[in-house]
Length: 316
Image: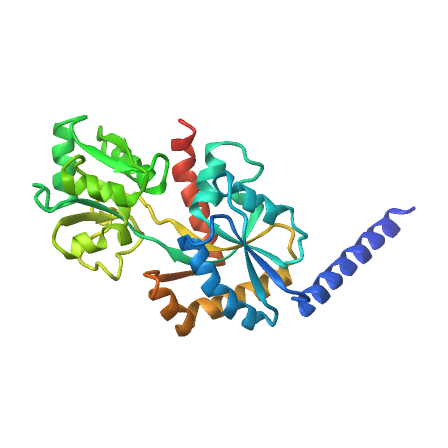
């Protein structure tokens, strides 16, 4: 076969593949869609997924069924999404835990680079709370005191959870020696802080909100890219000189290999639902603020969090 014939054959094959992909995207979806949640039923991710599934199905013209595939720190469900046919009929409701933290700790068969971002739905806010009677009024006060007293101050957090890792990030950025006290959840951490058993608590805003509003705790900083609308007077750590982020995300992803036309259709549908007032209002009733990000920015969050947390979890 001549080089010209070979090149012509490759061109024909490429055009045929592109046409087939375009035809598939035009007819998509052709059957019900599965939305995999990698955590147990009843959790915050599951709740938002079930609120999201119905309007997403309406936008796409096919029902969306939420399927819980919990286990392995979210890796079982994530691998199920990765192994499914690459036709866009299996979506992943992905989170910081299964998408970044779990594969950063150990080899589980995937990394964030094996997936394509569709859109972020939620970015929870982690705040640094102290007892209302603590002497620190600002993050600078706390940092100054902690530097002068290395190893004196204790903070609570679930081991290798996002709040724990975020506090480690602050300690590294500020040059602090803090002592981590393992907790089984945010609520036990709040109890320990109020009891004086620990001096600081990095926690989701929802965990400490009632105590902040009751005047029992004080927030020194939040670790989001922007201030939380619910707490506009609490500055970010970045505003105070420390580029440390702790915003656990929830969003939609698909495995690499799904046709681009299908991806484009999904991105448009997710944006439509996420920006809709009905979905946002229903989410707020569950104390969830929708923080939509389009695909490009959502992918940048993946890369940022991997760069931040993988070295911590791997001890490098």
